[in-house]
Structures are given as C-alpha cells and as structure tokens.
Image (cartoon, rainbow, N blue to C red; front, side, top):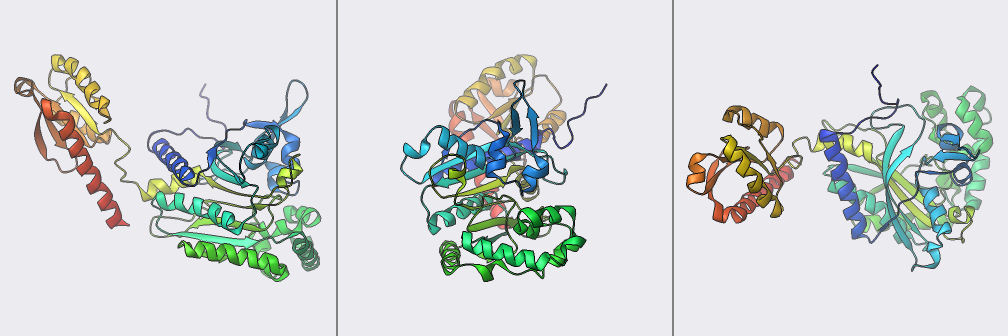
Length: 437
C-alpha cells in the first residue's frame, strides 16, 4: 500500500532543498549583521500560551491550531507561530534580567497551522524571524523592517514593496473599534461567518477578510489613521522617515492589521512586485510592534518588535529568480578513464576537498560523452579528466562545462590553479547575474 505525505506537508529535496539551505544561510548571515542571537524553543507548548498571547479572535487560535491532549490529559499545541513561545522562554529563563536591553533574538524552524494548502503555503511550514524586546524606539522598529528587507534583497528579488500601518495606542484602538462596529452594524448580516465572529470579538480583524464581497464592504469602512493619537502618528512617521534614510520606501496601507491580536503600534508586510516570471504569492513576511505581550505571559512590562519571513514562499520565488543558479552543484566532477585510475581518484578527490573545494566522482568507467552528461546533470562547474596520458605526465585535464574550454594542469600546481579557475568562474557568474537583473 502506498503511503502518501499528510495533506499540507511536502518533501523537500534537490533544487528546492538547495533554495531552503541558501535562504537559511542568508537569514543567519543578516541576523549576525544586526547582532541578533539565535534562540531555539520547543515545537510544542501548552495550549493556553497561544490563547493568551495570540488572541482568541485570531484565525490561528479559533480554527488553525493543531491541539491534542497528552497522556497526562494536558492540552498541548504544535506551535502555530514563534513569538509566543519566545516570550515564554524569556520569562522562564529570566533572559530579560541577564542581558543589556534590547534583547535581540532570531529563530528558524517549522510551524503548524491547519489551513488550506496553496502555492507557497503548507500546514507544516518554516519561518525565520527576529524579536527585539525591551527598548521602545522607532529606530528599532525601522531596524526590524530593514532586516527582512535586506534578506529579500540579498536573495536577488528585484522589486519589493514594503507596506506599513499603525494600530495606535490603546485609546486610539478603542475609538476605532467603536467606529468600526457602528459602520459594520448595517452590513454584518450579509458578511461571512468569520466576519460575524470577528465583529463580536475584535472588529479590527474584519479588515483582514479575504472574501471578495466583504472586501468591497471593507473599502468603505473608517480609516484607522483618522483615529490615531498625535503621538502614534508621529511614531509612524518617524519609522517611515528612518526607513527612507536608508533607501527603503514604505507605503501606508490603512487596512493592514496583520493576523495576530498581540500587535500594537506599527505593523508591516513585504510583497514582491510582479515582474515577468515573478508572481505575487501573497505576503512574503511581516511583523509588528507589541506592547503587552511579555507581560501577558508573566514577564515584566517590556515592549517589543518582531518580524518573520515564510521560507516556503521565498523558496518559490528563489527558484524563479535564480533558476540558473550554478551554486547548486559540485565545483568539480572527477572522471577516471580506467578502473585503476578511478581507485587513485579517491585520494585525489580528498586532496581537492581538503583545499575547501567540492568534488563528486564517477565511480565506474563510462564513455566520455555519457559521463559529461552526468556531470552536467549534477550541475558541476568543471569536469576533471584523468587518463593514462595524464598519469604519465603527472597532470590532470580540467574542462569548464559552461565554456567547454579545456586546460592541462600539473599535479604540483593543482590546488592553486583549481582555486584560481573556480574564482574566475564565480566572478563571471555573479557579473552575469547583475547584468540580468
């Protein structure tokens, strides 16, 4: 009997796995640039943590969590997002007391939500994100947005749109909730069941509805910006100005509220701008400021800002933007023209690897035509051919699989020459990528 993967999950291999690894490496590198330190939290938490922090009015808590009872009868949930668990960890380990604030953390790993699978969105999905806690500053909010933007630029995505909004302070949101309830009062009976529930629990969530008929109704709703306090407006303007200083253009979206109830103040999202083969797959990521979240889970009253990116959607775009990525393959493919030479190639490959260059090998004798095809399918940059003549002359023959140019290289000079050839190859590749973009 064939056993298929669970709906909403998928196996990651070959080019997609390469995209994941590259994205994760870039995310870690950029986190280091901004001095964010890694944190790893359990994949499951007590259910009450997410109910208290994420909010009962959110779709995540109301219908998307994977929740079960363990053998002791405790309600356990597979994490639907990282931030709540990180706040719990900060409190459990008193991290706020052992570090100079702000506490700057990054995470990377899987989350689980029971939602409709679609392009770039699965029920088991992966997120990279950051949290900065304990230092309320518009510059820190701008920095969080800049971290995600730098990652997307580093992936070679040519055009990115950053949208921002402010949910304001508690007084601003209270006035706005009343205005929304008054507006939707005459419409709510004709709206979807989710909107009806949101109307009673948190009418701001209605602005995030994706039903086309309801979107038309939402267009006529009061705008949050008109209800912001002067202080909230100044804070949002300061964030936008700080981003502008470093070359990031942000536009205000009055209907942007994000999907988590713990957000207060500035919220934001990243979208790819459709261009040729690149299609909009929804928000690539986003985040926002939170004022009471740490206190809600038992910690001190410290504000924070968070940002998260969806790895699946980034991988989807990466395979379009970088479809000719030669980095997904070995530097060299080592070919022997006889069984005896193939045996000797085992140690030759080890010498090349010890110099920090990657090698794959042909383990059986085949015709040159067929073995070159193997090297190309493996996306090798160069083929190294060793025959009887090469053994006698103590040299190897190196073929650039892109230009088809062949070069004889003496074994005594091998490491230095291979490194030089590889560097020239990569320089030419990156130059061509810049021209393409």
